[in-house]
Length: 340
Image (cartoon, rainbow, N blue to C red; front, side, top):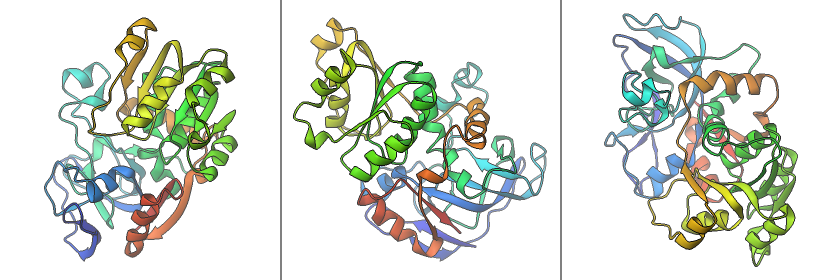
């Protein structure tokens, strides 16, 4: 099969012929319809972030497709099923999984990180973890549900605990942040989107943001938000992964506000402990999505409560995957789908 293979940070993906995966007990072989190109993939390519499995490795963790074959004991799905491969696969047996927090399972596996992912014609995954897709959702477009939608859903609903009527600031409206805007708006919040790029601010307005601010045009964005909201945001979501944007998000909060960090960074962020203590701020992290919530997000997409097509910027064949990396480096668009 054809695949885009990762050989190490600082090196481009190379298009190669590789063996098609064999299916072991409980496995499913999925013929990939589409796989989203995510900023996590760029961390591996450009920023020296190590993959759990050493290269060579096939990246890609936002996967939709059709079950091609099943290994022995793979009775959870059937050949021909339209499915989503979740971006985080928990073990299902540990204390975290049993308490409903499988997204932080210490034994979790991630396609395109722990094992070969979706920038290929086929991907192997445990049949039990595949999520069925309804026939009235576009199979290729549904790939973005696997991470770009489910990750911000978990952040908004469970970690930030957004309520109707809340003032919510979303800092960073890229492929994940733009969907944090969608889910916060769907929850009935008053959303203020923050992004440097005008086209992303405009898209945020179209997808439910009440206001959209350019941080470069605001000498004190925190003060501006506090003025707009009568005291500050109830919740701020940081979806960039930089110390300066974490500090920016924190500056927008009202007393008793909650900061939810969704963006990834290995940097150390200075926190003003006097404000943290005196204003009783709450700071939480957010990773991936609980398995139980995939069906809920799929239903929101199916019924139009959140939009898929609006957050898909381009669809490219596998041999043009390098362009997806270039566009993401340049901050262009939201999500590019790769179609093997």
